[in-house]
Image 1: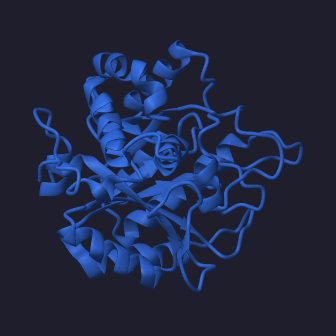
Image 2: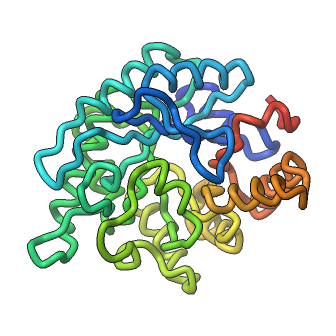
Length: 315
């Protein structure tokens, strides 16, 4: 039932054709900005304040882009005693403005909220505090659901976070809020522009202790199977183009629909090559989407999703 509750979500899950509701546009909203700034390497994508994000979504809806993934960057970064007033205001304002004309997913993670920029909490010895991390991630998910988000996309890669989030949602009568899990997410070199946009570069170490090793296929498949077993409604590979060999096998092992996140570095590669007149941007972007669809991707998160109508993707 969670994947049938509105037309956009149903279109997102149609298996027999490529519809623009299967393309998801990331949106970055920051509490720190007076005016928007373009994200280096990914043209026509901005970090915005809330007012500007409303204007951008309104423009996107006119171009028939209705599916969005929201990233929120609060002003005050903490490592404990979090509050979610900014995030709840962003979600409720967007949803109250556009209601069911759009589908809003919210990224669930800690990297943009913490002083250290990691996706988890640490103990005094800088070891991952898994119990505390799962507790706060579940609290974030519940707060976003209470604010009215349509779906949740946990990206932290903590073991057990999907079942923890599903439980807190169900216990609080948000059982119809779907989870689109970042289920096979690699510690990749292709996230650079995103980390600039989300202000989420780690201040020490790296994320290899919890994100997947891109050299290991079986580990990546197991991660998606675990998210399936923990109650995810949709699964995702990231980076998308660098993970196309995983999609079909994950679908077979889980029976769930699997999407692909065309990450900022992958998208930037197309944009920068086009800038040097080495290829046609629109043609190359469309080709990249069809390659991911050919590999079995049910949905695609792309920084160019708002160009779907221009590129001739069916409504």
